[in-house]
Image 1 (cartoon, rainbow, N blue to C red):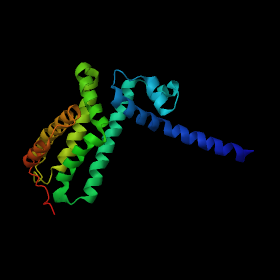
Image 2: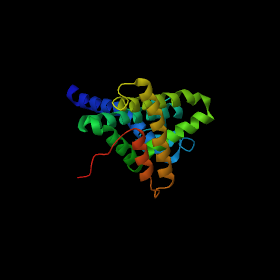
Image 3: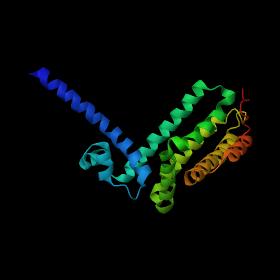
Image 4: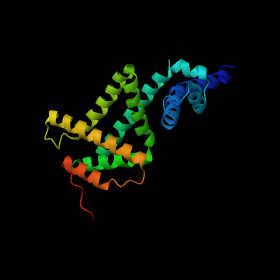
Amino acid sequence: MTKQIEPEREKTWTHRADNRERLIAAGYTVLSEKGYEATTVKEVARAAGVSPGLFHYYFASKEELLVAVLREAGIRYGRLMQDLRAVVPADHFLEAALAALRDRVAQDPGWYRLHYELFALGLRNPAFLPIVGEQLAFIRQMFARAFEDVTEGDEKKAQALAAVVFASVEGLALQQLAQPDLDLDGAYELLRELIGVVPPPTP
């Protein structure tokens, strides 16, 4: 009798352990497609394949889900940069990072839409401003670490450069999303010149 019950318990536990991750993944999709205001808890729960009641077991509110979604997106962004560092020579890392961020506009536009959604929420609702600040600080820090070689270890200069480049990348992504046919090659080239990145010679 014990042998029959144990596998079922194990299956249920695995399912429960996945519920939060499934809700975050569903939240990422629905929030980036519909925006914060238009997204409902029911829609997110449906997309995750769970009940609305279970949503509230893991998240007290839609706001809490948005924060979790953005934190997860930030972690993924960090992994993307780490993976690049592992395979790209140090002297070509910044070039590769800029190319990856540019490609991401087409490959994962939801990531940028979520950022813009958070920025707008922060401007409308002061309660969101600390979350906006946390996200901005996280991404600036990722850029600053990437600029350590360019600034020869000058942390203050790396932080300043990170703020400028982050603003540029976000602004260029917004323009690309609004006008998909817009040619931004010259803008990205200028940005590379600004941070002293020379593209590798074409074979």
